[in-house]
Length: 147
Image (cartoon, rainbow, N blue to C red; front, side, top):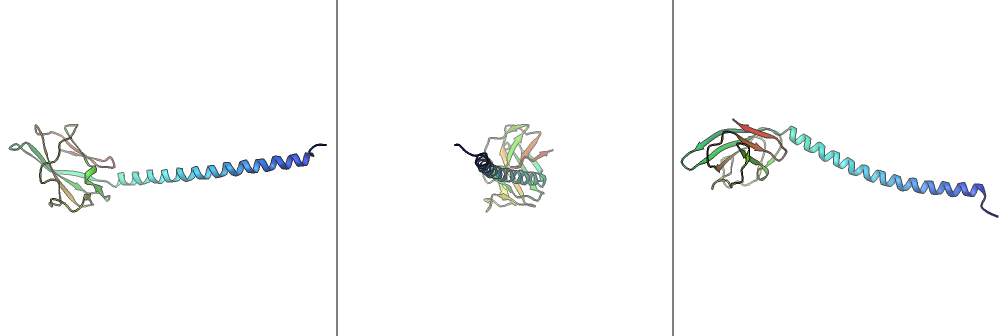
């Protein structure tokens, strides 16, 4: 007396369906994570491609040893002023901006920390000597050089 062959096949089929159901749920759950990460990556790529930052009107003030320059957002993305990084001659600027700066569209203090397309940002940093190369790096990794 034992199981019949048909009963053994039914038990095996039920076990396979249960395993397939668990595997399918896990697969679709992971696919949603992959999809959301792909969308986030695409969003970063679009932001980087549409960011256009330029530096103009850089002047050295020898009297108080400061470098003053204007940053223009000529792209189509909104930039966060607090996330801009500054480099003088390839060295990261750790000094704070001079008093009365940054000026967003010639206004200090500005009502916003966002550099929207078409806006300008005037910045002034103290420096030991006049930098020969100025770089501004946006939050999306795009870089503006002067000169």
